[in-house]
Structures are given as C-alpha cells and as structure tokens.
Length: 100
Image 1 (spheres, rainbow, N blue to C red):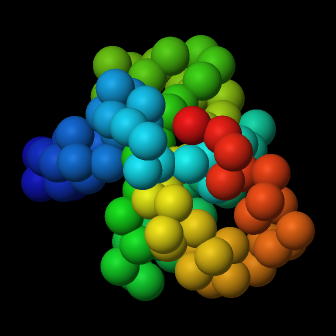
Image 2 (cartoon, rainbow, N blue to C red):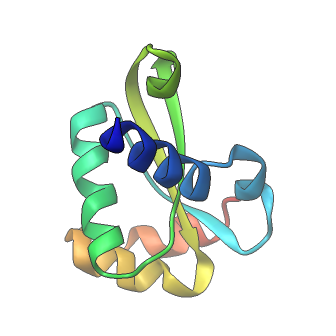
C-alpha cells in the first residue's frame, strides 16, 4: 500500500496535464516506452529537476491501464540541465523551446 501511495503522490505532483500548458513548461521528450519514461523520470527526480508527465496509449497506470509511452515536460530554464543528465541531443533544445 505504501508503494501505491508513493506513486500517487509522485503522479499528482508531477503529472498534472493542465500544468504543462503553462508558458514555463516545455517538452523534453516523448518516448514510446513506459519503462524508459519511468527511468528518465527517476533520473530527473534524483537530479532535482521538476517534471510533468503525460501518459499516452492504453490508459493511465493509476487507473489500472497500461500506458504505451510518456511525454515529459520540464521548466524552460531547466531544459538544458535535463537534456544533459539524460544524455539527449542538445540540438533539440531550440526545437523544444518553441513547444508548450
């Protein structure tokens, strides 16, 4: 039960879809692997980089569905840090900075 509560806390703090529309949040990446998305979330959390999650595919994990993938959003000012810790191509920075 403790793991479920921890998951719900993490999801409620980091997955509010409405928040991603705020001008300060930009798309970091979309991955078609829920497992890879989970690993990237753990890395961002460990590094103290705030993030928002948008699951897509077979439904929300909270409701018993199996997400196919996730889109991760980070604050615009932390995009370079997030790209670096995940080892993603910094050339995407310019493309992502224009997305909300």
